[in-house]
Image (cartoon, rainbow over all chains, first blue to last red; front, top):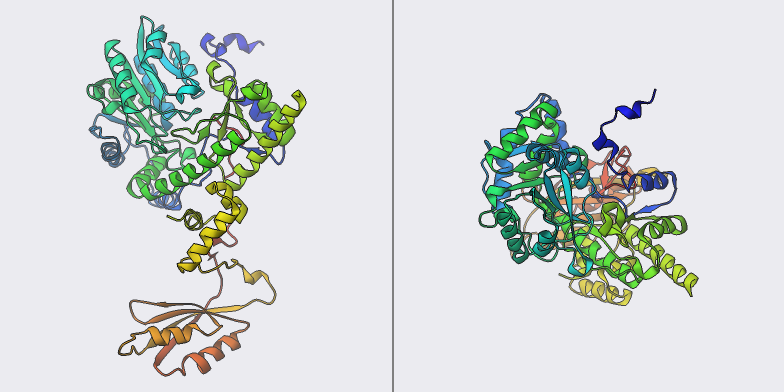
Length: 392
Length: 160
């Protein structure tokens, strides 16, 4: 029987992930140094893991409130107030979700009527466009550029905007580009959002990992709290990817709408992950600082070495990805990445996997040890030289 | 902060060449920084971290709590220095609490360590008492876990 014909159109229409086929090849190869990994190489700090073991011993194995444990929501509100300067109420302005990914899905499903439009910048995280499409929305990509540090500009938003646009989905610092926005740019974006009456969905999962300027949340700007859903989680800063735990903060009406979807689809985030998150907020600040310090040194190392190798690369303002151009090699990003893997066994992700504007770039994660970065850069250097030799 | 000190505190196991790469300096400059740290007596030297229980000529190790009489003018320093100079003594600390010095000693056999305690350490004038604890097994050594089950924490090779 042809079961394919039963599959919903919006699922059939989803593009194949640009990472998946690459992953298939890499996973079968040996001795690969991977700069293709979008998660911290650090293990979750032991005190957090130990807190989970204790929680199991204490029998914390039940459902929690749909919104999440109240102690955790209080801790989240304290953390967001202290670090981002935004005040939220733990009773009705926070929801704990299965990673930021679930939060994105919830808010899109809560907001979008079929055909509503959502602006998102790209290159961007692989799930943005599919999440909009699955909610029956229409994604409007907004270009960001290497010569501008992949920051988001109000002018580009203006150009991409169309009538029927309801929300702006943004991720600063950005995976894959490491792009960030300073306050002045954010203020312009905020004015644009107010003028066009948009809800801003701000995914700030990498916001602890900024290296040059302090992070500013768009939700903290005047008039923005009421129209922003602030999304954050524990995966990156606390090295807790596998715990799948994140949260959304925002106006009570929107959180309530997200909760409606969440209660019927997920019920609640796993209690053990919630316990882990609580421990992370209570005693994890030093871990975050240590990891950030090391990411900073790795960033400087990889950016310097990639530029030396002839791959033009600006220092990313945040996250743990370098996003160099491979244009100088004469190859496209896919050919470069496959060629590099074949010739030197180094895995990087072709930039096109993150949207058409990512073409001509590769994403090289520096969430890996110094020795691996050094060796990988030596191999990249060799590969680029070999390509240059082939052309002359 | 001295860039080399930062990397040393981080606790990685980088070669000088790797340190040079990470810090964006030449190896000569790394050596220079190390030399500075040595002059400031911050960097004392390198020591390997060994699990000698895997070696047949296993060493015996003990921690010894020592009570001593403090002296006018020097406190505990003169005696602590005198005890520290024995080759058997790996580390020596002045402690708060029920005793004064905590010393870590190592010897080729139980008898040798026992002899050190009874013949050398406890006979020093000013040493009031010793309490020796032999180490039975090491679970963590210099930040390395010993015999910890290998974690199944391998990351996928490519993730978004």
